[in-house]
Length: 252
Image (tube, rainbow, N blue to C red):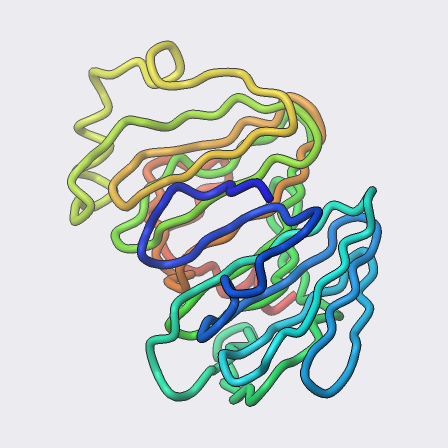
């Protein structure tokens, strides 16, 4: 077991392997996902085998009896504490969303693909009130927006590739994009707040933290976050995208 996220009240994002203490899943909401290889999860009513690209959402109402992780598997779990009586999954429909109640568990497949100017995202699961898991692919030579979040808390695990990561510069999380831009005018963010990293590598961004990823090679990562997916304040963007959700990307 290797925890990837910093300790926080919203989620625990970890790579799973070996013998797992099942008590950690009691009264929790858990998403399992297999990036490579396979795992077998025995629930109270059946055994479920997950292969690469597949996931499983398990509510606090469902008992996990055993987990077997294939030795060469690269698998994750995301755990959140129960907050409400209902577990609700959100499906993005472009300009609207659909909400669906999950009772015991749900297999996760056929993930929504959101095209970006720099690559794409696969939305694996989005849980109202809990957590979101996405796969991110960025083409070599591209970069995401220079951005920060007002409420959203996120952790990235770089699975493959090489990148320049810009982070650790903070602004008031309630700042506008123009206010933040004025603050950073006198700061050399590349020189003082970025570093080159190779996979595997993981990092967490907190609200008000200005951050950006430059892909030095083709870049694949998994991102876990809180569910405020529209909470993106873009300070600079190579495609001129404004802050918030870009509806056109979600309709494609």
